[in-house]
Image (cartoon, rainbow, N blue to C red; front, side, top):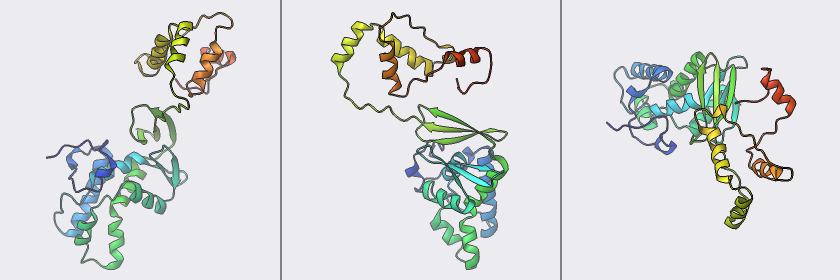
Amino acid sequence: MLEIDLVTAPPELIKTKIEYPPELLKGKERIAYNSIKAKLTEINKGEISGTIINCHAILQALKSIAYDDKNARYYTITNDGEFIPYRQNDVVKFYARTCGSILNKEELELLISGEKEEDKNKIRNLGIMSVLDELRVSQHITIADNRVDMFAKQASLKYKGDGEYRIIRTHVPFNVNNPINSLVIDDYKIHFPLLDEFLKLVLASRFAPDRKKAFLWLHATTDWGKGFLMNAMKESGLVVDVTVKLVESIMEGKPAPLQA
């Protein structure tokens, strides 16, 4: 049997006839799969083909759609990280366009060929409607937490339980408008010999296991160029200005509009 990572498999594989092993599905994905399989088996009055249900498409739906019970809206996240509200009819169209069909269209049409015409459309939407039913039960949203994953290849939603979602967005590469000039860098290193170590510390403060403890107290004389260094980083979106008053509030344990 072909082994495939169902979560990270590229979207172009969605429309192929590769069989994604359903035994790899767990939790709510498995519940949705079993629901779809049971309904199709009842329609077929017997066992169905193992390739009629696209397991990867089920995973994609549960990764990219959330349900807001309070406002009766479905929220989807695009590959660009946009969080967009939809009504049920619209989210079905969005899903079919971006994630592919949960049911193999060719096999499904053969299966429903003997059904009444008015019943065929209901059966065609059976896959996504079963997934949406599971979303309403197990993945209703009350709190959304935004994060950027430097290593994520596509944006996704992660359900943490109790109505809490984490919106995971991909990192947007820094916009470098000017070509890198090694002569300028070498010249700046004469002024700031610890530049490489400084940049390593910046990276470690983002990725190291103990990154929350990272800090740098830069002892520099007046007119050394602290503003120049910070402005260079600020242009790339690497710096957040914090006032002394806000730092004092944080140290006192008061609420602050910052995340570690």
